[in-house]
Length: 251
Picture 1 (cartoon, rainbow, N blue to C red):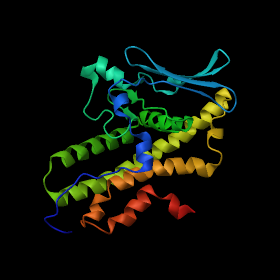
Picture 2: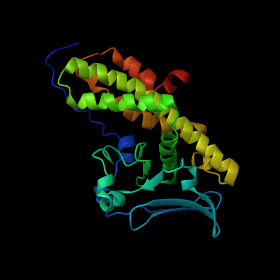
Picture 3: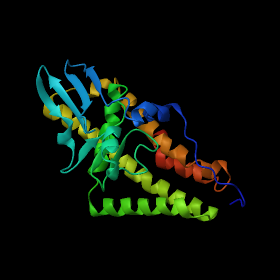
Picture 4: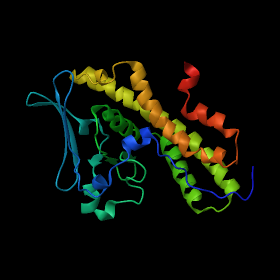
């Protein structure tokens, strides 16, 4: 491992990252959470927020609500928008909307809603809902470990220790993110099975679906690439590919 190299925060400004990055207007609650779309089967997707910043997403067939997305959440969870934190500043965290416009907070039982830019982004929402179902004792322990590592990364000045922490974090993040994407697919199938709403048609082929998920996973890989680029552990790149680009080895 090289010595006396300056640590720099990873710069992850790629197309797949920008797709989820919120606009400043959205963060400032000047652009509200709202979206309307007619699905391939004729159903209407309607997304909107309340004056207090709570979020709602429903699918209607005619005037009948056939799916209220809040029903997909564990008990006690809710959808929130940037307006919510404006109205409830005591509920906010420094990490809310920090690096993208979607998120899940297990401790506060919140799903942070981002900007729906196209209907395919519902899969990202399902991904965050997938995180909200991580409630086993193993899940809780892993989340606590992730939080502990992130705190240590923010305070330690030992670069070698920072690299080791980041490598451990990458391994934990890979497991959690892949599990949440698997949860997103289960939600997609559940909606189609129970409501008859065809969301799979938003992705013409399974490869399109897989590409969407893999591009999201790739952003996590890139967030750890500073380890290789700055010469700390060049051999870790192969491990990163196995953690976040496993699909390349399956084709």
